[in-house]
Length: 424
View (cartoon, rainbow, N blue to C red):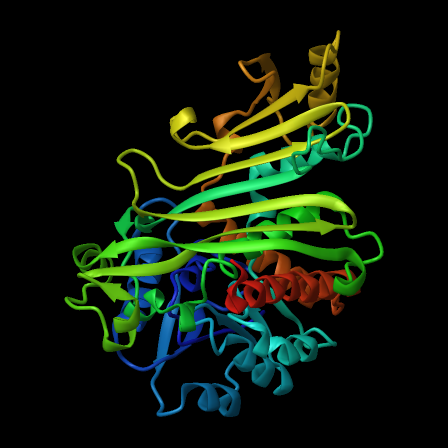
């Protein structure tokens, strides 16, 4: 049984790993953090899991607040797995010190805010103990089905952008003021400091690079110098009025450190970005945007378009779908019998997704996914924890995973350098 240690959790993703009971995890968890909003928010969210009526958890939180939480966690060694989610600027250095101390680390993305942290990246991916980032998309039902479509050579064919468009095109819109687990999310004020949180180039984009890697498949393992070619990167601002900052953080005024980015009571937050690159010769475009407030009855919006020689897969969620996740498969050109072939594939995948069907849609053919197969985003975090524990149980860190993590953050660091040099 594993004992989990949580070090200064400044982001709600840390608590979400505990959303369900886990028979491989000791119910007593150890929290190393000083007093404050971030610690209180973590404890409140974990206790809400314990208190719910449907499948409550039974976590027992033991709080430790030494002067130096990281040092105490290492020296006291009350467990063997550390979960990190919070400030991104020092994160890779922290991971490196925990790794050097022989502790396994499951850390939220992104691991870096700029290329200065890259030497630590090489160290923590060089060998045991295990250090892995929290990548949730691979547990999303629509994403998994889209992956199955793209991997089918007869139905989809080779990746092919066609009319000058990228073969892999990913776009998302998140929101600064939003609800998580039914409660308004309270963000720490440092979240709005890109020197700590990172700018738009390194945050959501890390998930998007993982999606592109997943689509292409590991094969021999990704190597940045061989497999990646950065073509362009740019970033731009979202306006954050003082009242929105207050609603999001509970802090009345912008901190003094943000003064250079505030004009007439509005913070200009460099949280949006677009990156274009080639991955093993395949054109990829990734665009991540942040809106101010989550729309009523809605939430984050996502769209992924993957273009193949026989068909295009379109996964989407947003206002046009009523914020319902959808997956469409669009044949390229006349394709008699395409719907029947798609139905055959869905029947073959039935063991993993019972009840799948397809129907004609305005785009082409929609894969109809039973409600029981959909899982909310919050549910994917304990699934990633399970993946991590599987690797620990096996005592092996696949070389392809280490290479995937290294190359993922190197491309983001290079894109950030591109923008920092004034080329955005």
